[in-house]
Image 1 (spheres, rainbow, N blue to C red):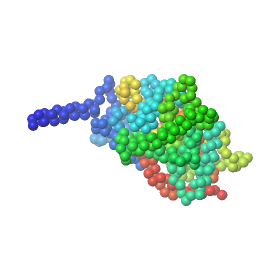
Image 2: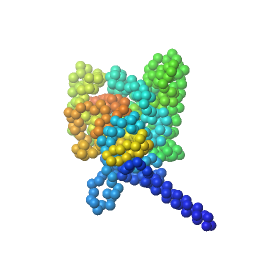
Image 3: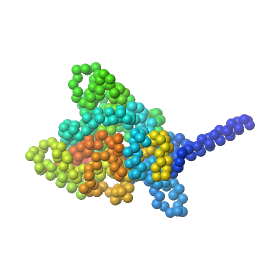
Image 4: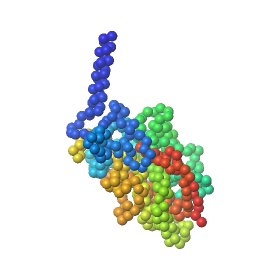
Length: 485
């Protein structure tokens, strides 16, 4: 009996020591303030707590805010714009500091490298473009820009997008209401899947898009692969989608006489080189990431954008004036949108930037420190993750006056943003500035053009948002369209 008590005591002491080491990690310097929470669990539950507003998440806001009195005990939990935490079992530094954010992006490949939680890697593949570095990443980025670069946008994608927006809106006008997020997701997925892999849902027995539906919820989640969890649904969707992609790739590889028609054909050409840089695994993971990234983020942004435009009549009036002027200047009012017309949309460009600023589709951008890094008196240990937090910058009242107000005029007379800045990182920054940025802007501007020139609309129901931390519309956003006379 005495031996059992000794064993129990030793185990208790070992647990206490382990828990202490967890909460007090060693560092060659001063760690940022903050808490690593409970062992293993960390502060994951707080990080994923639902937030039904466009504001900065309570998780970040409560830790950044230091505006409290000296006698307020809550001040002990408020750390400033740089703090440490632990999420899904990983110790990390969270940055709401514009200077540190900019530094992290500018030092990629030197002091930092791209890193994402294990769930992200498993879902998107171990060889996904976000996990690749150096030459391979630059090589893949160059390939993707052949599809999403301005040359192909001007020559091909703008016209295809205009045609799709017109047809989609016309079909919606025949319905009593449409759920906007789902409708936009379907439209954008069909556009991009056609260009990426030649996929046409009307000619396929499989619904490829449905395999991507649960991804936002599962990307940053506990890797518990049991039915009912967000991670399980994501992995199930990945397996189904990869089965389709692998079959398509092998059919194309066997068809040596096929002429290139889409991006998958470009991948096949690269794989057939005498000394290919690509592997089949890298190519498949790239196609998988592009299929998801091409439609989901833009559909979420545009859904929130239409809700914001609906709630702000002055914005809608200014948009309508700009787009109706474009139509009046055409020889044929029913002609398709041209590149010159798109580039002339000054106010629309301001609207899309403001939507991106408020939407904050990407709540965190992750990097990993390659060595001990000193910044503003704090040490970021080698191997630790850094989560750059764009919402904390985009919604900072010291940077943007009345930050929660939808005010496209705040961008007036400002230079077009072609890369991430200290105060605007909706599309990332540094070497990994999003290659789909221009496509996203074209999709949003084209849809807005077709909508405001041809239709009026009203909200039927829904429109409430939820962030966990990704953006979602739990009740949908249902609208009804009415053709203009």
